[in-house]
Structures are given as structure tokens and as C-alpha cells.
Image 1 (cartoon, rainbow, N blue to C red):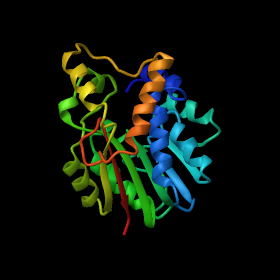
Image 2 (image 1 turned 60 degrees about the vertical axis):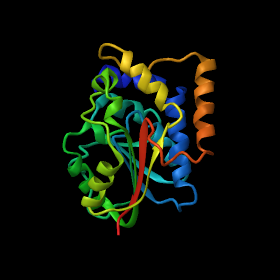
Image 3 (image 1 turned 90 degrees about the vertical axis):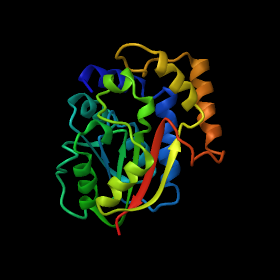
Image 4 (image 1 turned 135 degrees about the horizontal axis):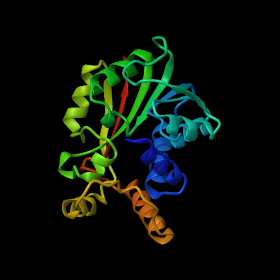
Length: 232
């Protein structure tokens, strides 16, 4: 993902339906957990880091991209440059490792998973979101610098192999998946879908994802996948 694409995404994060819904998802997954020390690996422009911080957590935001770090720093976050494959922290440093739509950017995602486990304290939680399903692979993925989209068994195996105990792995953005598949099947070229959206459409899409949170659809495939695991 090049720096210009990162800056475009950062400009959208506070108002775009997808980012807003993802922040709501993160907050819902942390509801009821006692705040502790958290690491956001591949923090992007820091929207999720800020949401976790606002829940009372002591958050460190980490990324390799200068544009991401600059945007996250503007949110008043504790920001560090670093590689997800070799985290600059001692063992057992965090109660939560968050990684939202980052693992697909790294060839050696097995190293990323092992490093997440290493820096977590015993009983610590891993919260990961990734793009789901290679049948949705398109120029959007190429534009964003993805190496893969994940299937549920593949992601679970990756995380368990790193030494985690998986608590949940479920689809997210399920209701919009048929539309995304149809669009990507007919779309030509290599271009990101992350672009400004008309306010009425933006509100409608946020409503769809809000309604989804009440429906029994998590066992279905979504545009994304969410995994929650703990370090035994």
C-alpha cells in the first residue's frame, strides 16, 4: 500500500461508513473487558487505536508507514515505527494486541502471529480483522497491497499454530457480500474502492452494518472476517 493511498484512506477514516462500522466492531469486541495495555499493530491512521484509548486502554500505535504514523500522531496517540514481524517490545508486554486489516499486507503472516503471541501476557487477547475469501480478489486488493484474502480454516490454523487458543472466528459485512462480489466480478483495472461516498449512501450503508450486528449471520462468509483468540 503506497503512501498516497494511505493518505487518501486517512482522509476518509473519520466519516466513511466502513471505517465507522469497523470502529463499532472493535468497541463491541472489547465491551466488558477491563482496560489494560494495548498494542495496535498496523495502526493505519489510528482510528481504531483512538477508539480503544477512549475505552480506557493505554494504547501504543505501531506502523511502518510514515504517512500512517503522522496521521495517528495527530490523534494524540503514543506512536512508534515498527515491523509486525519483529515487534520492538519485550515478551509479555500487553493485555491486548489489535490488528485490523494488516496481516494481509505481510507475506510472512506466520511471523506476525507469533510476534503477537510473544508480546501478549498470559490470558491476553488477540483481536484481528482481515479481508475474507479469495473469490472477492480484485484490483481493489492489488491497489491496497494485499497478498491474500483469508478463508476461515486458514486463519484459524495460522493463529493456532502460533500458540493461541481461538475463541471465535466469524464473518463481518455479510449482508453486503453479494453486492461486493457482483461489483468486483465486473470491475476492470487496479483501483481501491475506498473513496468518498454521498452522505445518504454513507448513512444507509452504516445502517446495514448496524442491522447486521443483530442478525444471526456470523457463521456466513462476509467481506471481512474477525478472529478473537487468547494466549493460554
